[in-house]
Image (cartoon, rainbow, N blue to C red):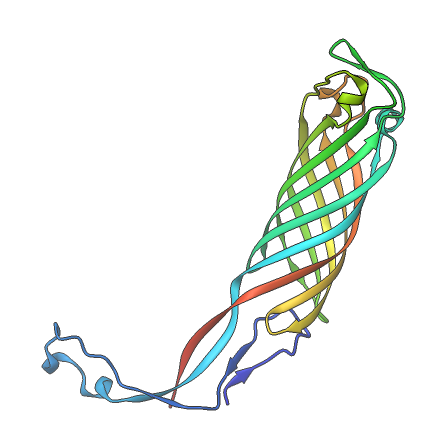
Length: 240
């Protein structure tokens, strides 16, 4: 058996080969003149079937987030939390991610938008969309640190306009996001893992686009669980 295994102790692709040996008959194309082909290359040879982890995978997160704003923004919507749904395309150590972070909040004080006063009875959907690229830095015992950089898109929507008998519109805003995720992976089967993770980050989001009296930026942290899986690459390894 030809095998290189890590038993999940480090984030290293495993190569596992069968003990069974196969005999391969070389294929000779008719467009070649057999006289020009080395006779040695025409002999059958032995191989063993092998498999390893593909470089392409998928990760899905579910987390709870908490957000912390500057004083002016806090006086309007307070410090709050919300769910976090994360979908990531993994290509080796690169992560191409999309986060969907919705939550409903109540305004803490009245604010005027486009000539209309938004009352404290208004319920706001604060929807954040994160688009980002990250990189995995792997350590022993399946621990990984994954810094990321990306862009956030934030919008507000009043969900009880019918009760208020008013219609409101808000400018959308966004900005650069930076952060890092600490993972502890647990191997559940070949090329599949569960993770318990925590993320800290900062969003340079321009809330002044929504209202000129608001602060810019917010700090956030997330705690959650994730599933990460890779495809299987199969190949034959020639043996002497």
